[in-house]
Image (tube, helix red, strand yellow):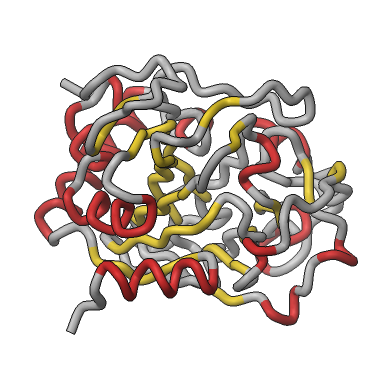
Length: 288
């Protein structure tokens, strides 16, 4: 039997995340994958689509349907309450370093991660000249809230899987309960390939990696996590793409703050459930 809203909220508050939550039907998943393939063609493939498809829910109807999907919002409302604002969204893809036998993927390492991963001549290992794992794109241990100038309530991030996500292709890893630790210090990452745009990480001596939990997902499932939860992900060493849609939500009581160390601003917010009696953001009332 599916957990109740009360049970979901209690578990989320205890561990800081939920995972393996069913969202998309087989038909919805297939439609989303076909539509994303069109975006890959429109934006000339992996160089752009790894990390730069930001807030495209404002442009494409099929993405709008994802951010407003009833099964997504049911979980979000169970945790945040009935009055909810959509902060932003982004597709994130880790493409394979070796194409699989069905032709999916390629060898592109993109954007800042690509620049940080330049493989110097001779610095390859493994079979057929495969790049060293230490030089592939990864996401360092971090807290989302470190980059956002927000206060007054919770921030919830959704990862909606368009592809199966597992250990080999770099699934999300979390450290349960760390959302209760407050904001931890972050520093510049020394390892090349960090996909975080500001290239930061929590110092290794503050991360209890022995407590880390892998969060594999089947395509069409989602995980959700708190903005203070310590999380990251390893490189994709498989022959399969790992693509997901990240959506950020807040209760309407959250407000922006001026903090030079947390400069991220959200300029195109949307009320996706209930009403906003606080008006802390210049939110549009709905998506077309």
